[in-house]
Amino acid sequence: MKKVFKTSLVAIAMALTVTVAYATTAKHAPKANENEYTWTRVGGETPPEETNPFVGTKTDAENYYGCSGTVDQCAVGTSTSLGVPPEVIYQH
Image (cartoon, rainbow, N blue to C red; front, side):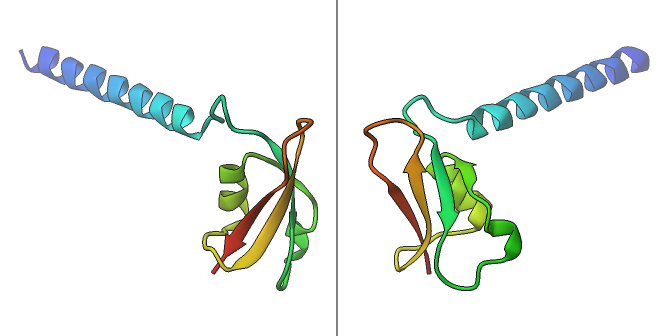
């Protein structure tokens, strides 16, 4: 009986691990309606690792640059799709 109980706990733990991993991957996947941009850091003291353009969605760029706010420009994104206007993310 104890062996069956332990086996069941291990199976449940493995199933939960796979479920959490899948949910995390799905959460961070680009949404169908999110455009990708080539982002360039602007303003302030720009660390050397952030001088190269970053390609990703607006959410990806906010996470990459650590920007959140509404006052100062943090990065400007040029869309990789034609006809999509540029985006700006802010800090502070």
